Length: 80
Image (cartoon, rainbow, N blue to C red; front, side, top):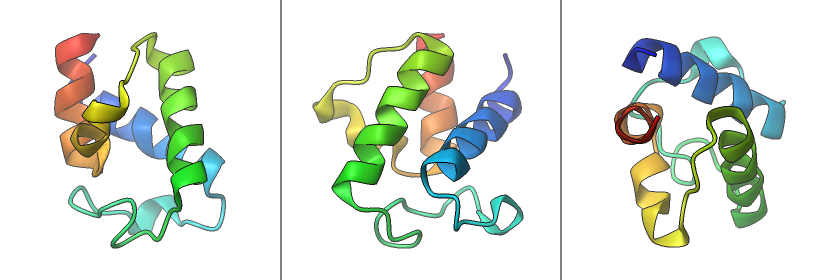
């Protein structure tokens, strides 16, 4: 998968967790908590969804690596 494909899949999973978000309005640099206002439970649900979709375990110490779509695409690409 390319980083663009991974980024798109990440945003798909993100919108499933937070359906009030508009996928077209999510920028690659938007931070989950600071910009998109997700809470810790939303982030945990996103981690679970990403694990199911990509088969990648994401430790809590790695959460900063998935804090934006761009960061997540690079992180997940290195693990897929």
